Length: 213
Image (cartoon, rainbow, N blue to C red; front, side):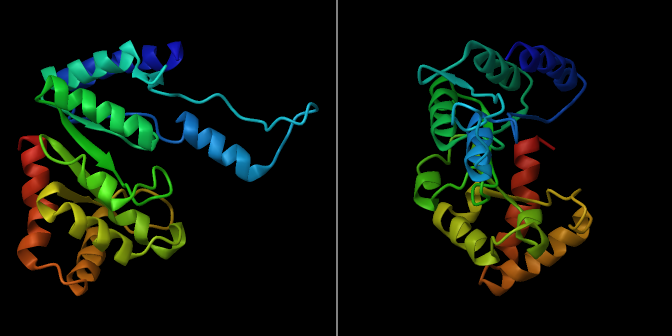
């Protein structure tokens, strides 16, 4: 944790210079490490599953102080906090805290991806008061997994387009560059009965509002 927090101190410089979003742990998240270890089935001599150290933002079911400092920083500089791959429990606890203190913008990152793999009804209870859902186009290309556009459509219809942002999350080897990924994804969502106005809201209006552009 010390190493992660020391790195996070650099994020204050990042937001001072105009950085717009701060991300919580991705594949270093503790529950991701545990899940991947269980899938691998690798064990030590004692028969225990081999798990690499991971990062949790909770201790005794409470947010750790370092994360509270990051939340304060995000609020101070009008930035956005991305939940990334932290667990369902961590996301819920984090958002309860941000709503309690107020004026914190949060993006629930790709909730239908395998990490964090959230149920639409669960997410519906979290949105509002500065909390939005980020639906990433890159997650739905066949080369990256078995998540479908219908999964995305169900999430959007449940939580409402007014609470959603569509991003590309491009950069992976087998995903198109951002403009093309967004274009293709938007076309498929259009076929799922989302109107042009709803798509424009999620692709342009909501991102501009969240990023204060």
